[in-house]
Length: 147
Image: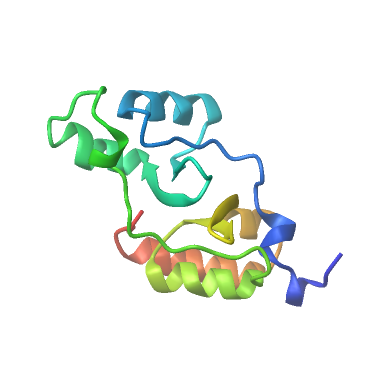
């Protein structure tokens, strides 16, 4: 196992990730969020390339508040402009990236394919770069989240 100073996302990321596709609708995404107890689900295409995410916030702000039905297409409410991590990226670099873009969850891709996801809480809970994760969480919490 790597030392705390050079742990990578590959070591701490959640690998078993629920996904949705553009064929799914908002209701199906919400059910998956409930069943998996998550607030974000990556949107993948037929090649498992990550093309966006849908968050509980997306469903409320772009879905319900815009009077979209549960049968609305994922693409009507999803976030497309997202930041990705790489499996070999250090936890420190990921925390800095998440703080810079004010995001709490970072999809991890390799060659465009979704391979996992990391939440800022994963970094703190697992005692990996606790100071950096705590600082990133503080900075993220100071502004409205992007996704």
